Image 1 (cartoon, one colour):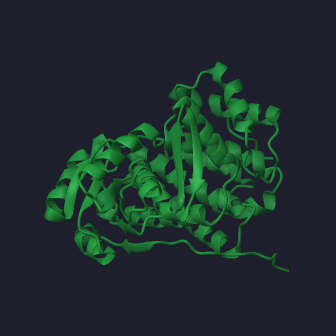
Image 2 (tube, rainbow, N blue to C red):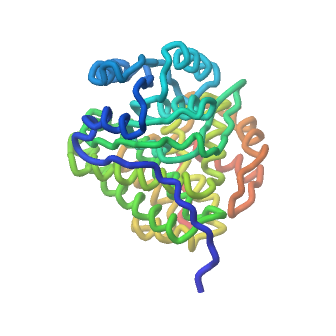
Length: 355
């Protein structure tokens, strides 16, 4: 007998396909907007300037100061620019850092957002904003945070570095994996989760072999879209809590942290609900999902050790303490000793046990 469930869709308008970057002006017109502030990271500033030139008078200006973890002080600076140039919407060109900044502006102004996704973050289709202030990362969910339109043009990801492609893909997979055991999971979100995981499982090794493989790049964007929809549809659990802890309190890189932790957070939770993660294990060809995810990560060159990104051994106790505060719901309740052991394994890069 099927369990009772509630499903509510939150998918924005999606424009998917090669060459869809050319439809930005058309999509602005669809939104009824005429003066966009284009957002990017410093790394993608040239791309943002080219887009601004293409838009002409429809672009009010460019802000290229987006950074990881959406610091509130950067948001305040961007809001000042948004007001000064008289913008009536934002265009976020890039990955999670830029998308997060666009969401932070929209949360405070309710301005429409158009996202041009160039990585596999998946956050572009969620009403969730994670932002950092005073060394802590907090999360807020609100309808105003969900972008109105998302453009996925696979050609824009052809030059995404392989390492970034791999870690960004794992970030997306983490959304879907946690969706499988979310407290408010439902049959629709679980179908999308497995479809997204399967698409990325096939695409990421192909991208490692040929970074400009058009089919693999399109499949990776498709998979990340589905994984992002899952993130927006159901609640997250231990994995995202730990990643927010390490990112906000220790400034660890976002997607790399997701990639390293996913096998270990899954191992922690899988002990309580192996049946919910059995589809992932079957896809990976293993008895348990956790070691399968670790082997998959290792096989495509994903990072596996937290110590490689500046987290010191003496930080692990503090990380455990912060993770235990205001814990997210999880099928296996958070136990400080077990969380500390899990973080130790992720710090060392040890392979999770098969049983």
